[in-house]
Length: 108
Image (cartoon, rainbow, N blue to C red; front, side, top):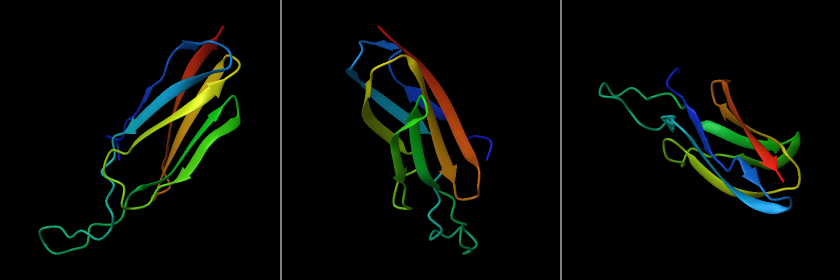
């Protein structure tokens, strides 16, 4: 699926020990596997079934996603940053595809 695009919105810098708001959105159709096409054939299930975020290799959030989530899943959360580093975001698709994105943050 070539049109899947992860997007991240997070600050580029923050004060040490502060909480930062992180917003993610991934363009994905999220087919539940229960819908039928115009010929009556079941459309195969294809969902993002897991999302994980790490900061400098430490887990920030790791969640399972169920078929009831809408297309283009949006995830928002806060994280406390004590040092400069890299957030790594990973989305796991039913078909085995893994999508990832990174975001650098400088802490002063």
